[in-house]
Amino acid sequence: MNSNKSGTLTMCRKAGKLVMGMDMVKQSCNIREAKAVFTATDISEKSLKEARFVCAKNDIPLYRLDMTMDDIWYSLGKKLGIMAMTDAGFAKSCSKGLEQIQTDKSEFDL
Image 1 (cartoon, helix red, strand yellow):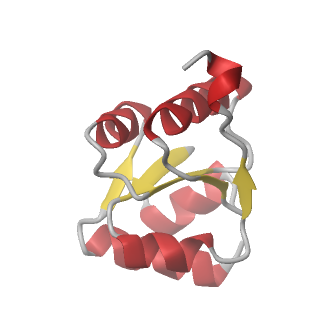
Image 2: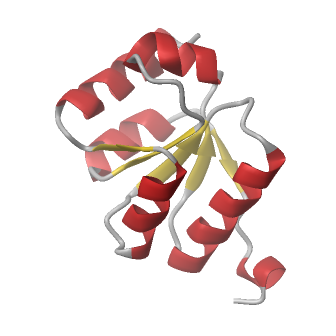
Image 3: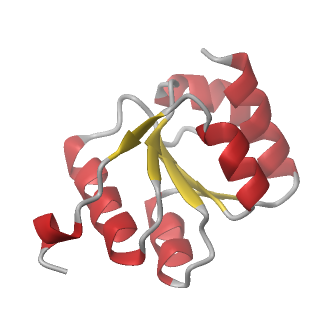
């Protein structure tokens, strides 16, 4: 587990700038509140495809955290596989060094 990312997630949550769970992330993306979306390494393919679609539709970057759902649970006290940051500074800090997942609009006929 990357303690730097864990700390950023914790600070972001305490600041009220972390949106957790698929439904809330989708809503945040659709109203253009999310600055970046992050997924756990062990998220299901179906959930990843859904996240890719929402991010492609709304031009929001999608990143794969170097953390599993259990790592996130340990950091935040909530087991989840997807989250969004609504603060650009936190999103930029957390995305450094992470793999960006491609979200090609043509793949989804948008």
